[in-house]
Image (cartoon, rainbow, N blue to C red; front, side, top):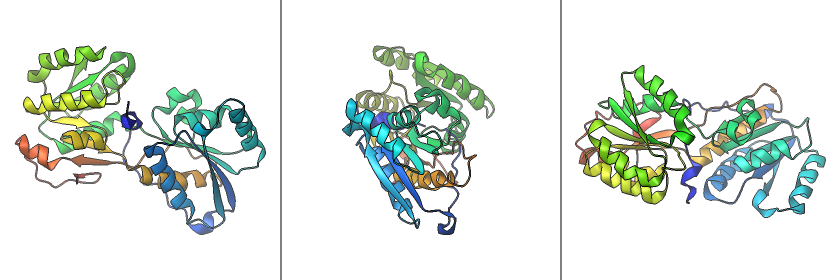
Length: 308
């Protein structure tokens, strides 16, 4: 499986509040990264770049995939004893480690790059952080703005994992006169049959992060079939866009890293910092829209725009 799962899509675009250098106190930060993969590295680069602009703030980075067994236990003890002023977790494994395994109870903690944080750890739903989710309302509104003719939006998902998302999306879409058509696939072998039975019933096909439905080969196959049936596909990262999706929600991990640094530093002076909306863009694929004879006036409002 590729890093396709690293992305996913909740909420309206919101820029993090800027922190002036005069507001930042001298601080030592421990940055714990789940593993050495591209999305987390890009987020880390954005974070450290932003921290480098803050006088008196220093970070020390720890990659969890370098520690196992006793070494991991020793790391948790070391982090708890060293007197860090702030812990920042990048990725779900790092978030779980920071909240469960580090005993320094008074030290502020912040997470980023975590999909569905409440499922990673119950308490993360209300803790300070930047989840990798976009709200159903925000996504439906962006789809409507990017492909306005869509009235019957097919959503492909496994109910074991995403029934709640479907129910929320159905209600939000109804508010703007869009009907969400459930395309239920409980296994990957169900996907071709489900789609063949419903191409005539939908105006567009919407992919969301779903462990049953998603793999690179499935995405490429379904997009090819959708284009053959003159159906635009909506996806949730650059891979979808490059594979032929008509519209895709895009995260810039470096920007999320910069946003993380700004918001996390606020914890040192403001104890009521909570979850923050992730910055994101929505790319409309001009080439695909043209091939499907879908006309747009091109006058999009941020975060919606034509992709590269």
